[in-house]
Each structure stands twice: as C-alpha cells, then as structure tokens.
Length: 103
Image (spheres, one colour):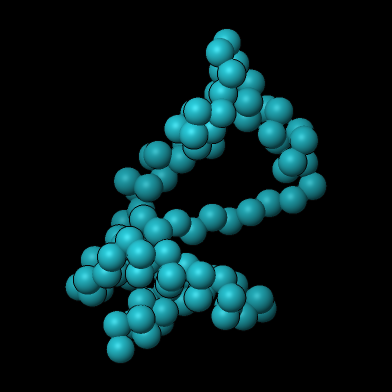
C-alpha cells in the first residue's frame, strides 16, 4: 500500500512556492511569472522527480520507525548515491534505506 501523499502534493501545486519561501522573487514578480521563466529557461527539455526529507520522515512514520531530519537527509543522500537507475527511486527504495539507517 502506498503512503497517503495528499498533504505533500497540496504544497507543490505551485512550484514557485520554493522561490517565494527563499525570498528569491523580486518585488512585483508573481509566482506565475517566475515559474514561466524557469520553465522556459531550465525545464523545456528535461524533467525532475523530487524526493524530500518530508517524504522520508512521513514514510518512516508510517513504518513506525523514528528518525530525525538529519537522518532523513542522510537517507536521501544514500538513496541518490546507491539507486539503480534502471529501477529508479520508489517507496520500496526509501523503505530499504530507512530500515538500513536504523540497523
């Protein structure tokens, strides 16, 4: 069974939220304008799937495994460096690395 991710997806409906949060939007520039600029300049020929420490923390919680934000960050680092590109990264990958981190 896949974890309920609706709380995470709601936050990412507008990708420009990260720009706004980081204070990178100039006065008078809307999130929509910034997203359009980024889409044209950076993402016209590529995609990225993003996993966050919130994903790791929530999955660990659902597995009843207690980890810290620092551990979640390290788990993401391990997932990135040890994943099999032919399989990608999925919830099973996260579960494996969460359990490995607690051994």
